[in-house]
Length: 317
Ligand SMILES: O=C[C@H](O)COP(=O)(O)O
Image (cartoon, rainbow, N blue to C red):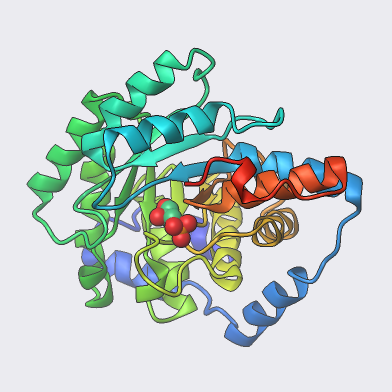
């Protein structure tokens, strides 16, 4: 696969036809094999000591998210406090993820938290979650979020264009949004629940990476199915193969429906077994989730003391 890729990468985005030929030339995903491998890896058990480390690692990889129409400045401030000091000596999370109009609130709250340094502010942009807007609007929204202090932008791809085979349109939008990001990192959301096949997930992953994505992300959290293990597996294979072909490492962020410690640990096993341990850091792997942190904290408490503190012990999202 890698040799096929390297011979054609130089001019893969030179035309619509070349891009289409490249993406459709990628090997097909063995659907049954991917489902079985993800299910098999999901049954792996780990020792108690490894579990404690895995929980802390997972906490440090969380993009603590609130993406509701009813979000308020107060809710975002409380989330930022929790992001920096989750409680019980747990590590801080990787980032908070909010709508663009709440970026300034998050930046201010993390600055006020002092130890906030290191917790990034991520913002969805580009007419999240549908992506149905003009490119000018998407670029403007991205630039505004960055100007307000966002460290990371989570954009959605145009699934309508992708599913109609207009790959160059999707490619050019990602390139334009990446340019608007400046120094901010760009996560490209594929919305895999709308892509219909694992072959499309592989194609969209490559398309996003070729266009300059720093991360590829499964889902908005607004469409089901979201971050299923086989989809994450296919995306981890894509970043592994892309690095082998280009030398550039791209991160992965499963998001949507990841709620339990078991889900989080399954994801860590998938990373270890598929892309490898180079990805097992918050720099290269994130878990986008609104309520996962509570379960990680409860399980952490249980491991340390032998009993659950109960959800009331932690602030609820
Ligand atoms: O990007 C993260 C998702 O929007 C969160 O989804 P969730 O509420 O299912 O955890």
